[in-house]
Image (cartoon, rainbow, N blue to C red; front, side, top):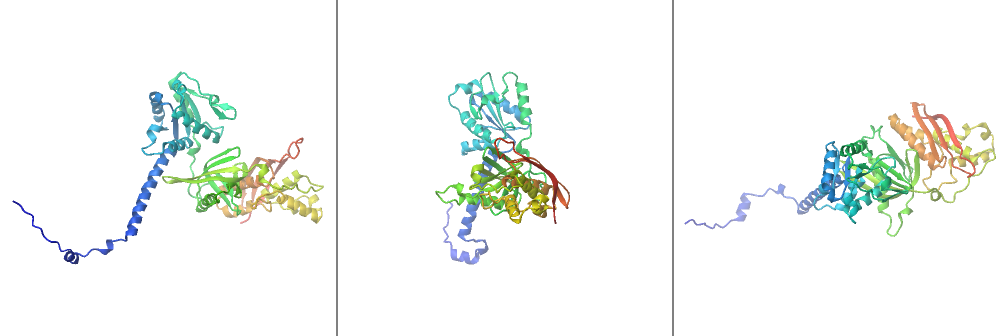
Length: 468
């Protein structure tokens, strides 16, 4: 019979003969920190993957009643055969995921929303589809009215619900696709609509020196710095502005981070309306805006910033507004013309017509104050027409002419609108022929000063001198 002999182990002798490698030992706090960081990295990766599924570009969200699962599957197969990514709740929500948030994200960031209506949907008093429709209608309010996004589809002979979508319209006012009468024709109509490039197809370079093709918005910070930031989406709905931004420099990221910090540091019990307004411009529009929300979103290797702004109305943008002193030889529209020429052509008062330079020194001082616009501005970072912003901009971007032209036009819009020079910009063409000057062609509609008179127009061509 085999026996096992017990031998006493001499731990001290073993340690002397086999000393431990102290270089492999690390302090316990360091080991615990590494474990926490590894767990945190796995958690962040899991969250990012869930968000990535919900925010995946070029996807079509399909809302339906589960009684129609079979026909909806055929619809999905027809779209998927044309390389169109479909988002369905049963396929894209993983175990343990907060499904309401995932659905909301998928709807808001989808390129299209297809609502599948049927007799089965109409006969049920409550479905998950009803909740999806509420989210989709809210998103529809934020979308441009000239872009198709919400597509009603009839799966069988039924009525489209008479659900209010705002502006006196209902879902019945949206053109639907009928798959019941002719399946092939209906599918082709869907494909023709969905194949139109959406706003998400725009690509944005991460290199600030090679983004001539990018579209940008302009922020002018409280300290007077200008930030031209590329965007994926801008939705300007009445006084609400929603942005998806793609900053391409550390300075832009730092600026957006400061905005987020300003919101975070608002004292408890205080209103965020106490934050000072900043200037914002996009295309031919500009406004003083207040922050409402700032969020940084990372999905995989892409990072975007979601910003929500509240536009200040004309009545709240100016306080204690003082009517400019009227000079005998000038009207307010003529003052607007002089201010526009200063902003766009860098024209000084001494370059104006001789009838102006022959006035008294006191009158010229009053006129200079009016041109600068110092009597009507509310904010500490107000825009004054001391000089044109274009020459200074050229000194920063002269090596990239296309960027300079794009930025010069945008900063001109911001100054023209927020200085009260014009109400509407009808034409603003800029062309850089050489370093001597920027050729400008401008036409704008002035503010209506009398309800019984049509507003005047400011219109001119000229060259803004540039310097190295």
